[in-house]
Image 1 (cartoon, rainbow, N blue to C red):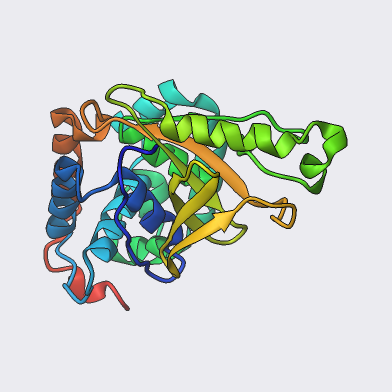
Image 2 (tube, helix red, strand yellow):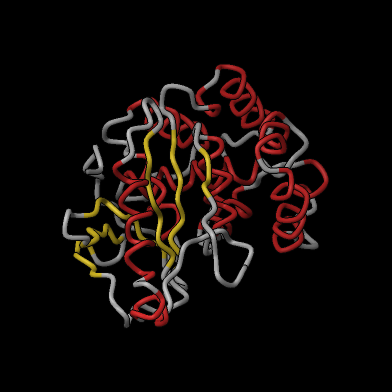
Length: 274
């Protein structure tokens, strides 16, 4: 069974992807992750109106994602992990974030309070989660799909439950079980579920194949995989390695903190909600 019982976090508006990621990497157990995200938030010098820790950490994750768009050590690392993600997704994200009055992001990778506050409330994609898992020492494991959609996520169709198809749904459920129960040494297997426009974290799966879900909006609940499951649900197989995470390397910490210093975040917090 999944070796870790995940924490349960709530979310900022449209922040389900970030909160689900935070649950999956289990900051309550892996304190080096937590310490880094807290230090980033503190250095951002954002006025502390956020009532929950996971909201603060979501700002830190958003800053990391935005920084990875520049020509720097983060992007170089990600290119080695997934060149297609860097080559095709990042330019799209930059274009979506570009504003006439905010050219600093695209030209110099300068993160302003306005950009960060806007981005933290943008719905995150599977590409965003893949970037974060790579940076946090992990990997993404694409699954076979009957109809390729470019995500690599596992999904169920009504036909999977047809006896004529050899109860294909049981084979897919076994893939979920095997991934969550797999002993990967230092690497910790996890699964994120995208329910269309909402991310949740799979805490574990019971021996009788019931999923235990941690939902940043709805708390903890059980989900049975049956014929009525929407075919747009996507299960993304990841792992992470808190003992060997790139984001925790000293060179990366120095880079992030030097960037924040050069962006002169001190005193800018008053502009956060303008």
